[in-house]
Amino acid sequence: MNRLLIALFFFGVLHGVAHAESDVYLCVDEHGKKEYKNTGATKGCKKVELIGITVVPAPVLPSSAKKAPGKAASSPADFPKVDEGTQKARDSDRKQILQEELKSEEQKLAELKKEYNNGEPERRGDERNYAKYQERTIMMKDDISRTEKNIEALRREIGNLK
Image (cartoon, rainbow, N blue to C red; front, side):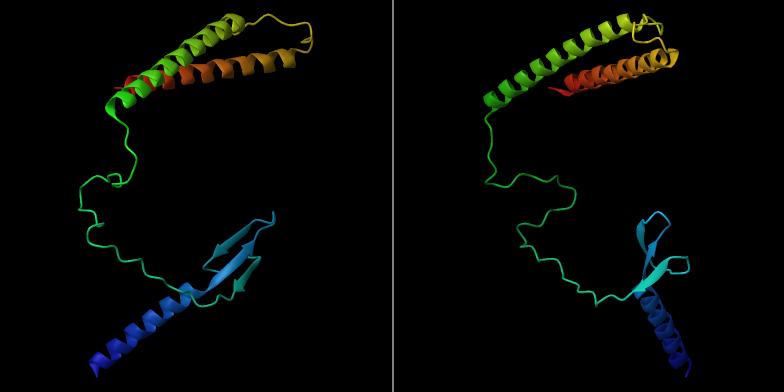
């Protein structure tokens, strides 16, 4: 008798959980944003009737394709490979390109800082309104910050090369 009560209790709990998880509500807020929820207690929510969910098991992989735990993923056998000399040439070209980009970014930074003049750039004729001058000054400061971040990223990338 005791086992029967326990079994009925668990069946009721499991049935309630399964039923609660199957209820889905579509809620639309005052801005028209749609959101799906598992509770419909809020305003603007309507219960959505869902067709049964189909579960498809993952395909079974052959034992040769299974990865051993802890091993890094490797390229497939038919993946094209590049010989060492070609790869070194590519790495050298990449490093040269990055160094050229770094040089141009450093030149750009020097020009921006010169024009920025420590936060007091020269006013232009079209900047009779002080707000326009301030806006341009803020944009210049943002350009300097962005260029400095680009330089940092390029230096990091060059440092990561072999």
